[in-house]
Every structure is written in C-alpha cells, then in structure tokens.
Length: 318
Length: 204
Image 1 (cartoon, rainbow over the protein chains, first blue to last red):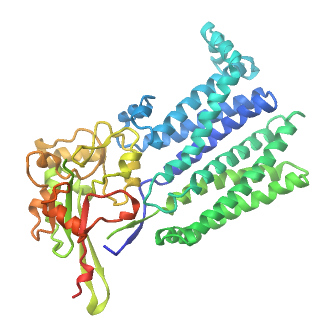
Image 2: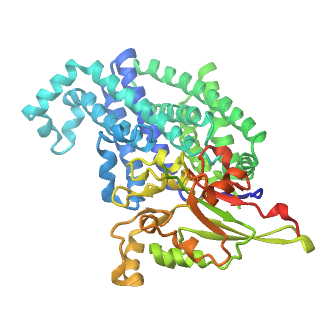
C-alpha cells in the first residue's frame, strides 16, 4: 500500500493535442476578430476570416476527437443541448456546447458581411445561395442584432478556449494537469496563437492603412500574452518542483525532452517574445520577423499541448 | 442502506490470477487484447534476502465520489443506490475521459474490433452489442441474485472479501472500521469502496 508505481498515460495522445490546439486557436481567433469588428474598427474581411477560420479549425479539432471515439453514434447524446441539464459539470459536454454555439452564432455574425463581400462571387454557388430570400432575410436580421450575436459568439468562443484547459484540469490523479495554472495557461496560449494567426493573415493580405492600427494592437497583445504565459509557466514549474513525486516526474519528463526545451520553451516562447518585443519597441524594417515570430508561436502552441499530454504522470498504488 | 465494498488482503493473495480468469469468463472481457476488468500486478519489493514479492489485485474501486462519473459527458457512467458504479454501454461514446480521470487505471476499451472478436470467442452467449469504455461492476448481475462477485467466489487464498459497508456486523465493514483495511490513494477524495490490508508491515 505504501508503494507507488509511476506511469505516463498513453490514452490521450497527439490527436487530443490537435483537438485542444485547434479548439483554443479557432475559438480565440473568432472571438478576437469579432471584438475587433465590434469595438475597434469595422472590418469585413477580418470577420469573415475569423469566423470561418474558427469554424474550420473547430471542425478539424472536433473531427479528430470524433474519429477516435469508441462508439461514434453515441456522440448524439453530447450534441443535444439538454445534456447540460443532465451533466452540467462534465467539461466535454460543456465544451461541445460551447463549440456548437460558437460556430452557430459565428456563422450568423459573418452572414451580413458575406452578403456584401465581393469575394463570395468567386465561390461557386455561394452567391446564388446568399441571394435566396430566406437567407437574405436572415442576413438582415443578423445585421440588426449584430452586437448581440457577436457577443453570443464571443462568449462561447472564450468558453471554448477556457474549456481546453479545464478539461485537463478535471483529472485529479495527475499533478501536472490538476492545478489552477493549467486553464489559465491554455487560455493565454489560445489567445496568443490567435493573435499570431491573425498577424500572419494581416501581413499577407493586402494591407490597408487602417489595418496598421490593428496590426500594432495585435503585436502588443501578443507580446503581453506571451509574457503572461511565461509567468504562468514559471509558476507551474515552481509548483511541480516542490510538489508531489508524480509532479516532479512530470517536470523531469518535460525538462528531459529537447522537443519541450528547444521546440517549445526556446523557439515557441522565448524567441517570439524577443522578436515581438523588438517589433513593439522599435519596429522591424520588414514584416518577416513578425511573421516568423507568429509561426513560431503557432508551433509552440501545439507543442505545449502535446508535451502536457506526454508528461501526465499517474501514481498508482501498486 | 447498502454500500457494497471489497476488502483485499495483500498477505493472502498468491498471484494465481484465478480472479482474472473468472472475471473474464463471467463478464466477457476482451482477453485476446490483454484487457481485463481486474488485474493482478506482480511486483518485487526490496533487494537480496529482503526481497518480497507482492501481488496487487486491481479493479474498479466503486468510489463514493467517482472522478470518472464527474467527467463523463453523456451520463453513461452512473452510480446505483447500492454504491456500484456502472457504465451504460449504449450511452457511452468512448471519449475515454473517464479512463483519464480514474486514479486507479481501472477502465478498459471495448472497441468495434473487440465486439466482433467477442462473438467468435464467447460464442452465442456473447452479450455485448456496442463498443464502449468498460469496467468492473462488482458482478452486479450476480450481486442482485445474492451471489458474490466471480473474483471473490473463485479466490483460492480468500484474499478478496465482499460485503456491505453500511452493515456494522459485516466482516468487511469491521475490517474497514478497524483501520486494518485502508482505501488506496485516499488523499484524492474519491472515497473508494475497495480497501486493502497491507502486507509490508508484517516483516519476514
């Protein structure tokens, strides 16, 4: 009884890391673009990019989880919103509802923007669909209540981003996951990767003068988010270092892996921090460093989730 | 009230694995894939002349506060009034969150392939129809008939005892009340219904 066997898990592996990564990135992208459109500067193409990136990323992540289910048909139970009455505290149930409603309100919010977007003419059948009377009517309704719909999508988006961390936190046997820092870390990472993704989009799209303010804001926000991530990570490391033996084993797995040390900590966090710092303080002559930094942040976002799953250590009583 | 519980005496478990075999046949688990509802861990403790071999039977702990039930998104994992934690295989979508939440590694996967294989392995008596996460049920179907779980009935060393924790006269309840039988990983707050009598303090 006094003995313990330490074991890493191999149940949730890379495919859950993909689910958590795309879940956080997609949800935060949608939320950030909608908030930008509502409160900073109306921006049609940003809304369309944000909404549809969010929907596609959430779709990809959810497909990853779905494809690994043992019983695919039974997923119907968790898609039903009434599941929240039965299982209000189960994070996958809550998360699934956040994802569904984020997609739903997100698509509605982007509908009036799609109506007025010339680019939709290039997608076969889309203009025809948008010109149908019920769709036009729905679009007018969405335009009238855009602020409410925008907030409904944003709240569900933020819920999705936070959920990705709360899901791991809900497993009490693993010290690395079952601590208050994890949801905070995953939320910060979700919004940081979203900023990075949007910076890439804005730097590659035809940049208008008015986009400059948005790019500057996103650069500053990304810098602050990376800095906050470093602080939260440090506090988690400190907790692991002085925590239980399982926590210390998780720490030694992380720090014994070059993928974590060099891939995530160095190139996924520290290097982007300094590249963004230079961008914010003095600026770069070209947009290459900012785009490079953003790509590193995106890679780091996936690696964070991947290694957090790899380093989950259970302490069994045998 | 009834709260079913099990006490396992690590001093008398001889590691014959008869419990695993009995459980497999009784509950039709995917043994061909090396998956069991109860498993006996074999561990050598100490070194040289002080070496001590321990057999540690593991199964679902039917916790009073089950972490697996809290995280289950569909409500497939539920607890009966008698304390037995069950899985409704029709409701379970197999996301494995319960497997991640369980501190005792007590759950296993029953895949599409296992359902197909089971038909050939267990023949026409094969009961399972859909894949899901699977676990020990304390042989609920036997307990309903007043019989002990298959693993308890077959245990040659009488290492497994089954009883009612809410009956002060029950030997299982008395072993728990005396503190001789202790819950594993009690600090996690799961309140297990499986208790172990330690073998290490006995000496040689």
